Structures are given as C-alpha cells and as structure tokens.
Length: 122
Image (tube, rainbow, N blue to C red; front, top):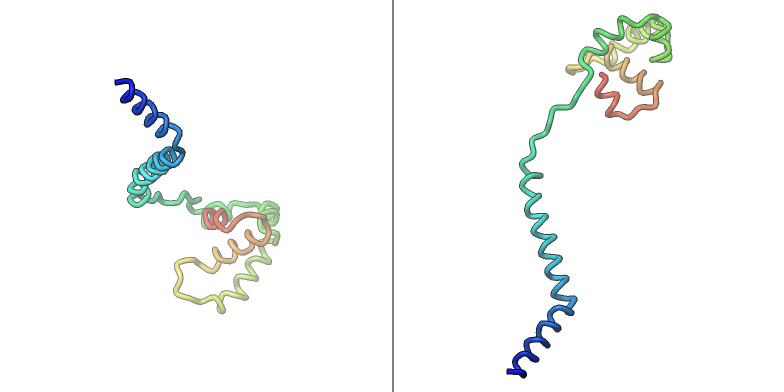
C-alpha cells in the first residue's frame, strides 16, 4: 500500500511540475476563448455611420462671410467663382454635387482633419 501511495504521489508531482502540460492547458483555454469570439465577429451587424446631415446644404449658407472665410480659407465670392470655373470639368454621374465636392476639398485643405471626419461632415 505504501508503494502505491508513493507512486501516486510521484505521478501527481510529475504532472503538477510539468510545464508542457500546463502550457497545453493554457493554449487550449486561449483557443476556446477565440472560438467563442469568432461567431460574434462574423455575424456582427455594422452600424450606419453617424454623419452631419445637410451641413453643406443647410449650415454653410447660414455662415456669415467672416465665418465662411475662417472655415474654408476663401471668401464666399471666390468660392462661387471657383465653382463656376471648374464645374464644366467636374461633370460626372455622381451623387455629390460640384459645390459640395469643392466645399469638402476646401475644408480638407484648410483644416487638419482626417478624411473620415471630412466625410462625416460632407
């Protein structure tokens, strides 16, 4: 009986000190955690981006000339001349108007914002 207890004690100590088995258990646990996350990632519904609605159409026309110049770094009259000058060359089947594209370009050139924030605004 004493030999069996000694053998059992030896085996338990051997398994408890075996770092390979512990590492396998850790790896299996990590893999199981990843398997639980994968369906959530695959079937996650994308939310519609939050955008400023009607900024170019409703807000910009309300700017004073001083505000317009501070935001777009151009006088409103210069902007209008620019639109008239480049509009014939910007004719495309697009959903974005020439005015809006020029405003977005001027905003991008005049402010240090990311493409994403400019896209949200315009």
